[in-house]
Length: 499
Image (cartoon, rainbow, N blue to C red; front, top):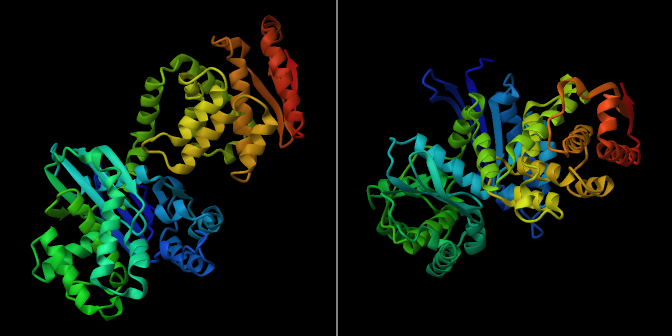
């Protein structure tokens, strides 16, 4: 497989999409293969918000086909993102565990805000560049994203839990198309956006842009039926009248309407109508690029060492007034220990990045209070809008910061409630905790006193430290002995050896 290829998989709530592109010399992307399969994951949520077995089987069959196309790709060439349906599904974790194996690559469930950011990036890269402000609207299967920005930089990002699949299932039961059903759905959409409308109240954008399947379908219908030369509010009103004449989605036979879009077109039309009415939008153009293209350009940035997450960490450090030197000290010792404890063949570069960022951000909670600052920091990292980070990545950052101090057993038990504990995660926590202990005095450890790990096994290791230095730092020695006693409770033995 050539190294100049990238692939993204968008596990949307309506359809799954695979995009493969090559990287040109000017760092732009050239699509060479695209696959779209309608899954309607949101429609497979039962009354308890669990994905049904039947819908999971449909989704896994699609992922198996995608997986065949991705044979030969390396991990750093592929990014897979899940959106609204997987954010909502209560059994998403169990499904994802199977889906990862089926596809051959790990799925990241991204937040609504992160989805909005990536959609904006994808849309802007598919249009002529301008610094004029634009509003991008993306109606998906389970959520709708709103983003304003200039150039390639998104500024305001919001995600609302309404989509063409969920609205079609709720307001057009059995596919019935009536004036009453449309009125209910449109008013519901307007009500959904009213809560965040003030964020976009200035209406100083130069253009409004629709992206993804719903916008494309509405655009095609307006054009093909002669209602307007783009998406317009007047054209949507005419389209609604035409749909009502058909009485049921099962009877739809319209120029410009694809068969797989027919069952959810009413929900999408209602949302778009409600949004345009509420925002006083009369016309809208469309962009070819959306989430999958945005994910790919984001992946391109990571591949070329222009990782947006680096910038996000820097901004958070500045906002939290963190001691950069202390974060670097802790990060250096953490990674040094981790690379000694974990076999090189088992080290994941992405996890190493996250471990280093967690070390740099471990004092974030101090902006709230010194007491329980590790808990405050974990809360901030879990709930802040961290551009570039997927939801699992944010969760791991928060869990590492939460676990870097305090009772070890309590911290581990808390993690067990959220995920299966793997040995590499335990070693990340161990190395992080030790690094914080070694750097408590906020001074760099002299080079000739470097800490070494010897005889590492799955059940423990020896920790070799300069005896003179350790004698001069009795608090560090006391804290190390307490930490060693904590790990002994987990049947992990650390032997302190002085040189």
